Figure 1 (tube, rainbow, N blue to C red):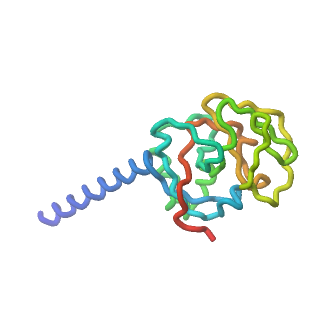
Figure 2: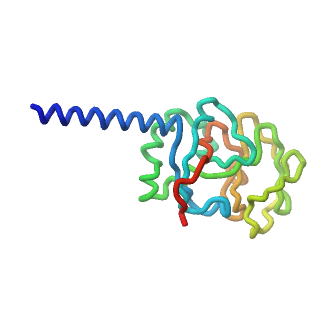
Length: 193
């Protein structure tokens, strides 16, 4: 009987710890691993970062040049239910065994906010008619294709990778709903190098 009580006590502690960790992961912070080269030279493949989710609690829009993690399924708006189910499917532990996090979680830089007009021309990005001074872009970049001017709708943002020729971003998926922002990168835990 004493052994059963001890096992029951430990199970309660384990379940409580899992619930607390899940709530922190959904609402406060999350650890994420950079997959691919779309943010070179700023971030390297394999870098491990902590992202803050505090902005999601206040429904705030990220700022220009913030490095964020997005849910790339821009055709749908992310829900709170996605947050809970995704922590089981897409986390640092599963990323060690699978590349599936690269399918929906992308690390990108915020280039445009709601109401902005974005134009790409001859390797340069213009926001509201003003050329951006992007010191973070990979200097080895070749000019990207030109686009017509795109106005970002309310509730959406425009994101791009720093390694423009090797990044799938808003140029492909279009503007991203603000609700699809998972969090903002805060600090590096481990270099992938």
